[in-house]
Image (cartoon, rainbow, N blue to C red; front, side, top):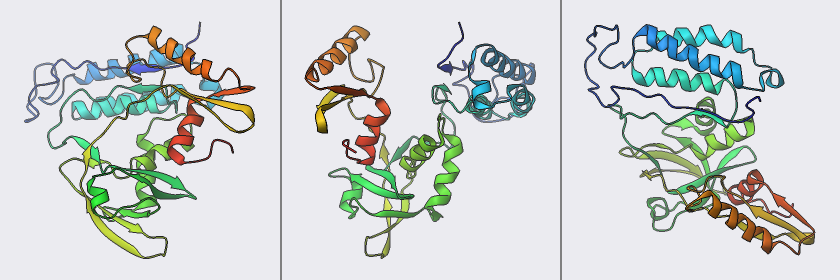
Length: 291
C-alpha cells in the first residue's frame, strides 16, 4: 500500500544539550557543535530521501523530480556547520514536497543567541493583497498603544510588509501557495520575545504612524468541535483538528463522541459541510459562511 499522507521526521541528536561554544574537532570528524560526522550526516540525509522516494505517492502528480533533489541535499548536509544547519537541511528536504502534512518536528535544542519566540497579541490577515489587523487582544500592549482592527501593516522593523511576507513564504511547509502566503501574513510580526517589533501602520484615511510593540509568548486558543446552521438549511461542522490532544480531549474515543454530538445538532439540516479549511477561512479571514 502506498503512503498517501504524512511524513513526520524526528532527528535524535545524542549531544543535543551539550555545549554550544567552541569548534574543536572530535575524533569522529564532527566539531563540538555538530553531533554527527560528515559521513553520518550524508547517511542520515540519504536515508530520509530514500524512505520518501519509497513511500511518497505524489511525485508525478506534483511534477517533482526527486532524483535531482538528492545530490543537492547530500552536499548541504555534508557542509552543515552546526546541528541547527543540519536540521534546517533536512527540513528543507521535506519542504521540497510542498506538502503540509510532510514536515520535521521542531528543532529539539536550545541555540545560543536565539531566544524564545513570540508575537504581539493581535491577529493579522490578508485583505485585497494587504496585511490587515483583524483582531487585537484586550489588555494587550497592542491595545494600550492604540492598535485597532482595520489598520494596514506597511512595514515591520523597517522592512516593507510585502517584502517581509515573501521572505517568510519559503520557510513555511504548505500544500498550496495560498496557504503558505496566508501563514506568512499571520506570522509577519513574529520574532524573539526579548525584542520589540517596530511596525508602521496605515489608517483608513491614509495617514501612517509607527509604534513599537512588545512580543508575548504564543497563545494557543482552546479548540473545540462545533456545529452551527448557515443559510438555506445548510449546516457547518467545524473540525479544527484530528488530534484529541489539540482539542483538549482525553482520547480518540472522546474525539469521536464530540464529533457525533456536533453531528447530531445538525440532524435537521438538508446538507452538511465538514471542512477544516472552510472553518479556518471563516474564523480567521472573517468571511461570512453563507457566501
